[in-house]
Length: 421
Image 1 (cartoon, helix red, strand yellow):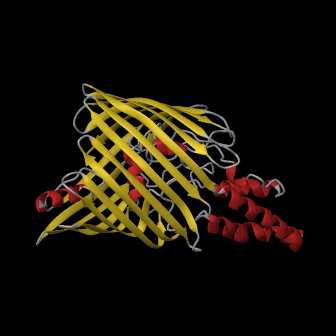
Image 2 (cartoon, rainbow, N blue to C red; image 1 turned 180 degrees about the horizontal axis):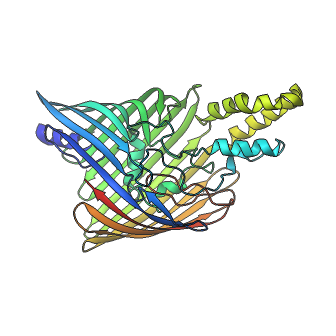
Image 3 (cartoon, rainbow, N blue to C red; image 1 turned 90 degrees about the horizontal axis):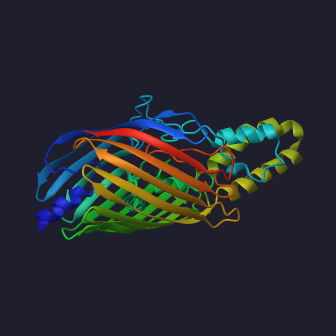
């Protein structure tokens, strides 16, 4: 019984394929392809179906039913050789500057540029941005420390028909109307400690606590996440909850997720539900601090009264525009045909705010295994945007960005190759 529990716990500790020998393993994924987004030129994109990466992981048996383990995983952008992917489309997001018409146009243009930095992911340029952790696997579970995937996001990813990759991934319409700077789920948290357990009969769970400067960008005072899972008899499902607190002590992004998959013969069916709410964006400090340090000095010639009035307009609207309140669902499945599989999904984001900026995603794809390690794939995805929504298909490694205008529909065709080593 202890041996089976031990093996099950090890399997839950690694995002890449699990192993159980006392050694260090180098592993990775090399994924790239071409992508044609509606209204844009054809592009070479790294990490379409899976983020390209290289990692190290290992365990050491230290006796008494205990094993030490570690994992370090770095992203690698195959198109540039860097670790900092950009948005796939160059279009400007407009949602964050709504209601700021009284502010001079040159300042609004500058704010839009500042809100949408060139680097879309890993702005800190961290070497091991994907995962950096060390821990101890015991007969009663695993205790891990470092930067890791959050419990809630693991449930979200398990329910995604396109496995958190390609332009048909569920996550491309759950980022909040404010765009990629307003995440719909905390994917990872740094400065965190986690406890995980998995039983031989498939029941498992995890609890995570993040200390000051936790969260993906280190903007939380604390982070809490928990999940319960069941992985047996064809099921891979669970429920998860994440909650972040900003550096001022306010409740920030809160998400609840339920769903997963069920394999039945040649079919694998998926379903998921995700609720997200953020009344106090953890980025507000950055936005307001940027105004005070960069914009305020240029307003001095207008006088104190005017400068104060413009600042108040900015703060009132940036607070309102960073609020997220939405629910979403996704359904779909895979059908295996020989060495390949057909994948199809339907997902909808229901924006509960006054703008009612809903989004609907439909996607279909085909994945063919050339060998146990290498596959080729093609995916077509379409997003219908309502009102102020500007969602556009992205990739596993980077957000798609924005459509040219709010409410404009978007679509993309992707063809790529993925090799695992």
